[in-house]
Image 1 (cartoon, one colour):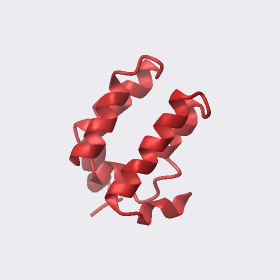
Image 2 (tube, helix red, strand yellow):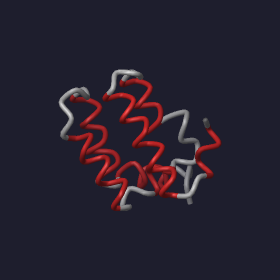
Image 3 (cartoon, helix red, strand yellow):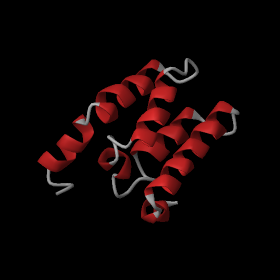
Image 4 (cartoon, rainbow, N blue to C red):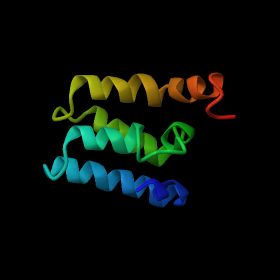
Length: 97
């Protein structure tokens, strides 16, 4: 799974969209979706780097409107990714240059 970070941007976003589709179909849990967006599966912080990509923003905004996702998860999307704070924090701490 960690090799997905080498995918081209459009394929990477398609993969995230697939995770979200699996979640909506009750095939995976919210925690696995969270791991796909924020944690182990994104070892290169690609979601943080691509926060201004229109395709990714569209997907994340769709997630924001999904009431089946927890409020905390939606707040993380809004506060950490969509406003670029996660990217700024990673750059400030030296994880990204």
